[in-house]
Length: 253
Image (cartoon, rainbow, N blue to C red; front, top):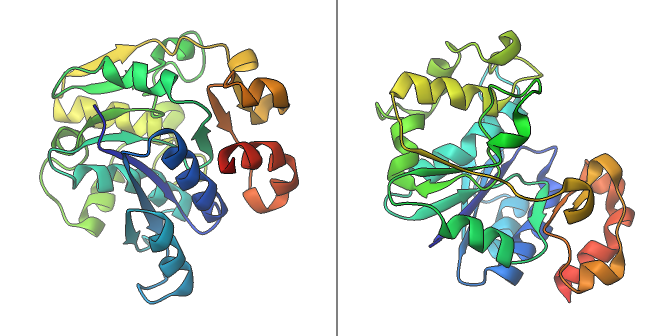
């Protein structure tokens, strides 16, 4: 059903890496947890060595001139997933963790072979994100992701240069600070003529089923009985860590 979970970050959001790894290991101990890290650090760096101690796989990606690191990072998780062949990979945000197993397992179990599972397109209808592709929990074989993200097998810097050609929703490009990878993915799907997208509804109430940064509040009793689905953290990690105590204790417990 699932072989790997793939997250990514630049230097700014790297503080989330440890709790993300712990959360996925808590609820999916059989799944490989992988990190794409956009950084100028090398393999001998202490921070990189620490990451290798908590992730099954860490891939380093250098910054790309003319593209904000955060945008390089958003797309690097798809590069990593695209390199994983027949393994079934699920994409997640580095500031998001599961708070239970059942919801994610049930959604991923719906996916048909050689299709990309897209969860929650319906929540974008009638909003400014209507033309976006929902990234969270997007799941497919590595080879299937590659058909969209790197069908011509371009080298790393060539691929990012190629992506500069696309103008996404609201005129945004990968070189812009307010770039959305969810907008670029729609354009890449169109460009590749890939049609095997399997949409399933999110089926949760963000207010009641998530611990979300838009209205941060944690009911500790509900948390401990598995009543929440996921947590979307306040950002960045270092400035908000004191607010995460109940979540961190629950994951470590």
